[in-house]
Length: 258
Image (cartoon, rainbow, N blue to C red; front, top):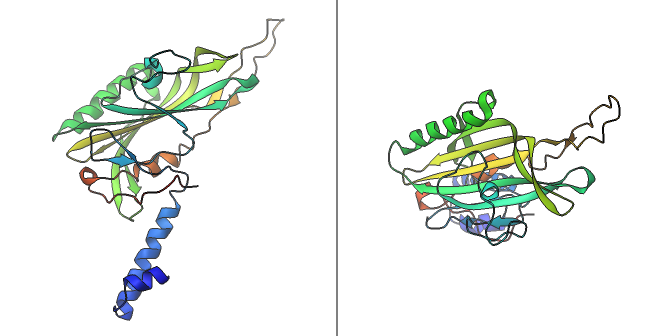
């Protein structure tokens, strides 16, 4: 409270209480963002965003990748069923499946310049692309109010698709493509200067390969491998978008929140 007192010295009691409550509100809001890294700038834009600390690896579309060679596999850097325009960086981490198999999950961050009407067209195009792959597993665009550290709100739009999708798993030291049940969400924010897109993709379960057929043996049960909190992390990350073109204050710099 000492910092608050210094900041508002000379104010009356009513002003003191108001400013104190505002500051306490900001501190409570900031506590919700624990588990996110410090702001990451989006190349060639005035924007930044914060990503969950679960993601320890990041790649550009032209990055090398240990399992892919001199250039990362396009099916890893982008969702294998669509191309996110203006992709800046892809984050990848892996969860342990049965028998030591590593199953990846992703966050994709993109930004493109925009003019009026572009966001509506892009949303229609993304919906059509996802319906080609997921059919009835695609929902409708939903408005999402995302609380910022400042206590103000940014309104994003989110689309979710659920169903089997390819993941490049690592088994016995080698990558293989396997179709697994999973979730894909794409979040869009239109600042009128830039459209920002954040995609989230995670498997929800992994079914081990069945043993050699012996009669009518039951198939092995699916094993949950979801490591990304899809109920919390997308909306928290969306609330950290900052920069002049986001009409929002820059989050406080610093080391990753623990």
